[in-house]
Image 1: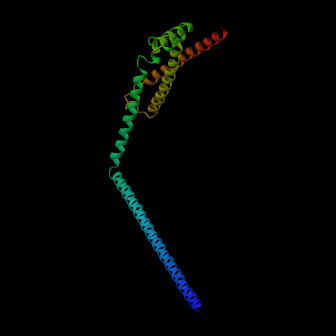
Image 2: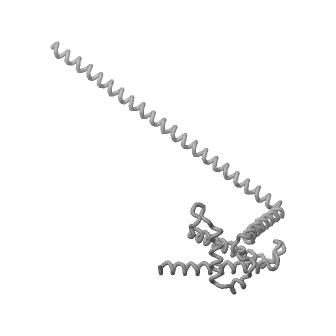
Image 3: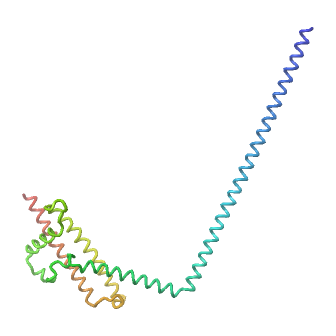
Length: 228
């Protein structure tokens, strides 16, 4: 009997401890669930506040853009004549500067369009082709000298070919500008003489003739090299 009573008391104590542990676990789970809900609520609140701040920033930017647009339109409307005149002066200045700079290169003594300047294009056409080839090769070899290998003749040929191509492109563009000016009847505004366009066209034809002399010599030189 004493053993039975002892066992009963032990079982009762064990059951009470088990119930207490389960109750503590349930209470802990409830506390953790409450904390999670609170964290979610804070996160949602922060996200809402962030969205509101972004919306406010976008609204402010939009209002500033609208205000700047209105201010610009008002300025242009109130100063329309001044804006037009400023644009015209700026455009004229830029175009005149381009004409001046290009003419400085075209009329430079070192320009290939001024090679043998004492002869016209017709005079060059009447000259011996072989003599022109020799004169041209001597001129380009003297002008384009390799800085470390003075006897490198190929370097002179390549540099001359590049320079001639660039000069032809520049002169062609200048002729287009002059034709546009004459079409718009603005030659006097840009201080362009009546014969300026014809002079440029003759220089352009002279460059093409020099290119023909050079390419014909290169073709014959290549053939002779293969023949050897």
